[in-house]
Length: 84
Length: 478
Image (tube, rainbow over the protein chains, first blue to last red):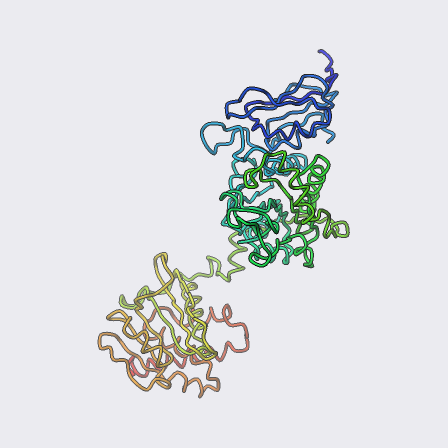
C-alpha cells in the first residue's frame, strides 16, 4: 500500500468548455497566472487558461467565477484523485 | 476554506437538464453574480450537511431556473410570492431549511409587500435578495433599486427622483421591523467583499439551522448584460456607483442573543387533521340513518336571510349533522361587502356521492328568512323542490306552484321561546321533519361541535323540537 503524497504545489484546473470568458478570474488572480486563451471554446468564448506555474491556491478565482464547475483549485498538500 | 480543494459543490446537479446541448453550464450570462451566489449557497449546504432538508424557492427573474442547478428540494413560484410560499412550506415543514431566493424586481417591486409581511411575521426562513439594480431577464428595464441617473430601457434619459422616485433600500426598510433577527447587505465585487458574502450566506443559513428567526441578506451583484458593459467593467461600476448608494454592512443582528432551539416537526396524521377540522372520527359516523324519500335525497340547499339571523350557522349545523349522518357535505358562505344586517346566504350540499363543486346554482331546497332572499332565489329552485320561508317576516307566499312550500313563523316562535336568534334552529327542525333526511338525535349530537356556548344547547334542542312539531301539526303545509 503506497503512502498518499500531497500535492507539492497548488494548482488551478480550468474546464475550458464551461468557461464563458468573463475574465473575472484573470482580474482577481493576485499571482497573475491566469490569462485569456486566443482560441474559442464550443460556446464561442475565449476561455481562461493557467500558465502552469505560480498558483498559490488562494481560491480568489474560484470565488469570482460564476460557473459552478469551470474552475477547480487544488491547494498545496491536497491528497487524492483529481476531481475535475 | 480549510478544504484542500475548491470545486463544484455536491449540492449542484452533475447535469443540468434544462435544455439539450451544454448541460454542464448555467444559463446565466458571463460575469453574472447569480452563479457566484449559487456557488456560495451550494457550498454552505454541503458544509452544513443540510442538502436533504433544504427547500429552495426559485423566483421569477433570471434565477427562475435555479431548480435545475440545486440538488435539493425545489419549487418555483409566482412572481414576488416566494416569501409567501416559503411561509407555507416552513410552517408545515418547520424541520426543513427554506431558502427564498429573489431578485430586485421580484422582491422589491411586485413582491414588495410579501417580503415586508414575511419579515414582519418573523418567519424562520432565509432570504437571499440579489440586487443588480435592473430587470435583467426582460432586457434591462428600470427596477425599484435602479439608481438615480441610471439609464435603462424604460428610463432612457436616466432615472429621476421626480418621475420614478428614489431607489428602494430594502435592508434599511426591513431592519426597521422588530421581527427580523439578521439583516445584512454585502456585495459581489472583489475577493474581500466576496468572502463577506460567503460569511453572510453561512450565517443566514446557520440562523435557520438553529431555528432563530428571519434572516435577510441583500447581495449587490453585477448584471453586465443589463448594464451593457463587460464583466470586469461591471465590477468597477458596482464599486463606483452601486456601493455609494447601497452602503454595505450589518443593519441588524440579534442572532447572538437568541438561544438555538430544535426545529420541530409537524405531524399531519388523519387524527390530527380530523381534530383540527372538527371532523368526527369514523366510529362516530352513523351508518344506520335511513334514506329520505327520493325527492329529498342529495339536497342542494341555499339558505338566505339577513345578517344576524344565524343563516351561516344554520348552514354549518346542517352540514355538520349531515357529516355525522354519513353524508359527504359542503358548506360555503357567500356574502359581499354589506352593512350590518345586510343579506347573507350560504350553500350547503349533502350527498351520498363525493361533491364536485360546493356552489349551488339550482337548489333543490331554498330556506328564505327574509323577503329579498325569497325574491332573489325563488326562481332558481328546481321544479319539485322545496321552499321553506319565515312567514313571520315574509308577508307574501312564494309564487311557484311546482315546488313544495312551507311557511313557518320561525321568528315569532323563537320570540316565544325567549330568543329571537334561535329561529334558525326552528327552521332546521322543520327541514329535517319535512324531508326525513336525518333523525333528530343526529342533529342533537352534532350541536356541541358547532355551538360554542354550551349552555345554549338545551335551548337549541328545544327550538329544533318546536320546528319539528310545527311540521307534524301542519302536515307539511302552511
